[in-house]
Length: 126
Length: 382
Image (tube, rainbow over all chains, first blue to last red; front, side, top):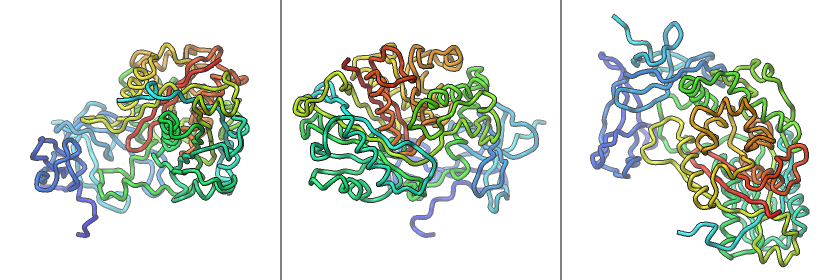
């Protein structure tokens, strides 16, 4: 991997998608997006930052249909989600029906717009 | 720690601009020189009287300021080009104020200029990637914030759109505005829809233009015989960047609150003292968020206050009397300087049909990618 390539931000696993982050040994912050430069809370770097995964599960805070994009096929739905880890992220939404605010969503890998994307869909309710 | 209040008083004595407009093919130098010449005339000085110059821009490129200002006649003064994303012009103004306040110089130029160009964003080169950065354009980020705001406060899409109706009405009287036309609520709500409830007329047009102001000390005003009543005092310049432990996805709101509180404290004023507010209304929702963050009303009340006319010219505080970023436009580098220009015009009582009656104190506010935030408070000398 070239030295300046961005770190992978997520992976699909048999138990659902995980989001890759870094754990700071000095202050305990889970740093996302993942990078090696330094902890955005305390500045610790080098060996202080180790790989950590966040479960791609959380609740829907906001969602909008986007009608304008230069390269990605529109319309698509973007969401703000609060993950169980406490992190607030922006990600693609997938699945039929209107977005459900405050409902639980989980991440899956999705082939869309000419590449693999992490997208969130409504958790199955049994 | 010192603030402007503890240093030599500084004043804005001259303002000028090239109208903001859609891409025309004009060079940035052509736009910029018109703005500077207008500001020099307004300040009743000549270019050789200027002792230092700060040029804000985000897109033009290395050494653009020097390559333009030499056509006013070379004088050998110090130049610096300032880049701070959308707040580039505000930052150029801050640097000019600080230099004059510190006593280095008595007469400074602060200006901003940009043409429509490719955005070469630094953060994209830092090799750090989020989950969907490429899909989360500013209009989508603010559409998500709008969705959240409407749910939390009960504000309607129509109420959010009224920001744009008001600001375009103001901008229709501004000869420097890029979209100088009044629109009805129906027109603002009409397609094209860009993202969420945000329609095209609720998103700032990013075009080209230039704005310039002359900053002077008391000594400068004395030496050049400037009419003191037309000078506008700069009470403070407050600037902050990303705040610790801000996990919210709209850091601009918290940053605006903290930076404005700092400015109020430094200037010895509060929201009740502000008659004129030029705010970073790149998207309609932003005006509602920021007037709340700045203490002009309680959280969740901005939409109903706006609907009742509180932020109209003639209301308790005229917000974006210039038309704001929504109507006047947001050519990046010039925008923050253009806000100062409008505020000075208002505080002099020279804003014509846009005049806020009895305007004594004005506040300008810009946020930019970083995030960064700059707030300036200005006071009439009439």
